[in-house]
Length: 92
Length: 503
Figure 1: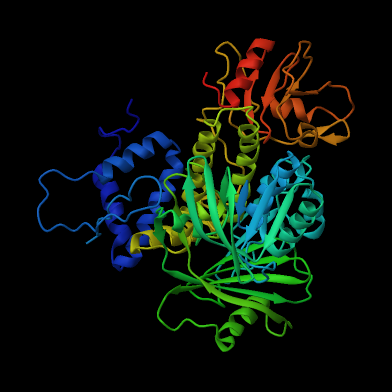
Figure 2: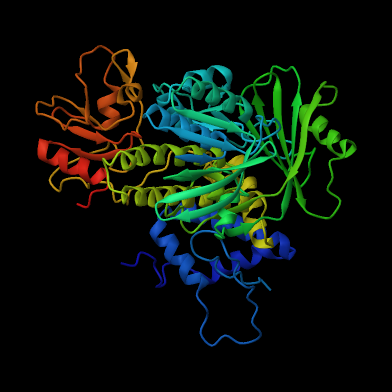
């Protein structure tokens, strides 16, 4: 059973998108990386639903169809237990 | 039977087996108890185990009791996060004690000296090993001469560089971490509280972390993250002492006791049982020190193994019971490795993104309570459950439990008529019941709990023990089964299963 809403669920998407862009205006990539991290953490806690969060994380990490360009994935690091780390996608 | 290794794991195992009447030989390479900095943090579960073995009170008396951990960030003087290791009070043992490993070993050796059938051989090094059917033959060298010794069972408690593991050519898979850390044990007199203090990015060690623990005898353990190896690492007092003064405060007098550098690894063997050779403690699994899961995990191995070996050696259980040691000890090792790896990744982020998340957590934690539980300076060792152990009997379908301890759970202490529950459970199979009327198998004890003995009823609440209910506990006090309406037949069946007879 899927818990993650993937149909449109937000009023004024252009406004919200613009808030995101404005949030990062004039920031360095390092700053933006941290701001995004803060934003994700705040939203995760607000959502508070582990099932939905897990689905969102899985979906976000899925390879995109018809991806162009060079392979920008770092090799997965082997862990001593559990599954290998998901490959880290460079923000560039 | 022979135990190789006289550290806390080997000695705990020897003590447990000796108390069960087994003849035990312990071979220890060193002919002295090594001083220096090793384990210092002993968890409540370890103390519960040691108390069952009669040395818990002595350890607590000798150690420094603490329950509180505080996490600081940057130059803030108020912690951004703190945690209590004993949220449930009314238990005999504290959340943690700090005690130098050599003191713990001395106490264990002293207890072993009082047991019959224990042969502690210091300065005896294993130099060769052959497996011959159901026998293990060891070549031992001691004081310039060599001899051979045979055993039905060999337990290798000989540490991370286990000579037994190497002799058998067994692999030790895992991951090595690049960050270097510095341990400084220093002596000083101070009124600082007995709490675990951890700093992220403190002014005295910018960009790195630091940890402070109180030990007995005015000894303090300081642990500094130094970052990745840049080839300049050395034990140079000129570099170390500014760190120490930065942490303690300028002008605080201290005497250095021990400095050492370390890196760490997370590893484990694929199996801990190899015929008649069994691995326990660091020889079988390694973790980072953040979380105190190394030595405590090893003592838990000994606790899990001792009663099983004893039953198998006295033909009261099939050899397959020992397979459950493999299952349960690996479940423990995996939980410890997982937690320790997560802590390490939080402490030493490996990529720009993981550093961004880590720093975001710390920044948010200062103002927002939601972010504080994400702060991971080490998740400290707690008893591990075995929900999927083959020794468990699942709850009856019609029984309704609103809490209590599911099969495979470690025990939970509570006051019991002026004593403590865990003291009463002892070290054999026990039925804990309210109002049990029937017979019990000869090797099962009974702990009967009657409310009204005057101390409130914390026990019934913690165990969800309503009138008529019963639990079957293993000799290591883990829950094997529980019933709302127990019968002699169901208890006997669960007992057989917990002894490794197939269901």
